Length: 89
Image (cartoon, rainbow, N blue to C red; front, side, top):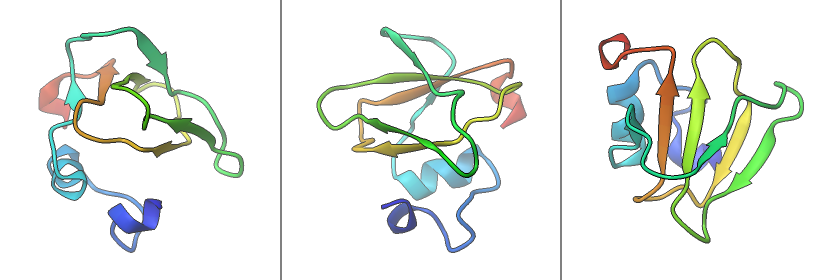
């Protein structure tokens, strides 16, 4: 599934490219719901999160590596970033 939304490189260079790839604004700096941390996993064993059943607010600390697969991520789901400002993206 990740290959369906990411470019061939498997990553994006900045927030604008990520938003363009996903198709909607999904990064927030103001948490609006119960947090679900995604600073988990390893490059060889990513942790799978399934957001298809509800709207989710994932939290991501820029100081911690994040290796996850987000399934069902759609409009209404967000990623709250901590340890950075909007100008860092």
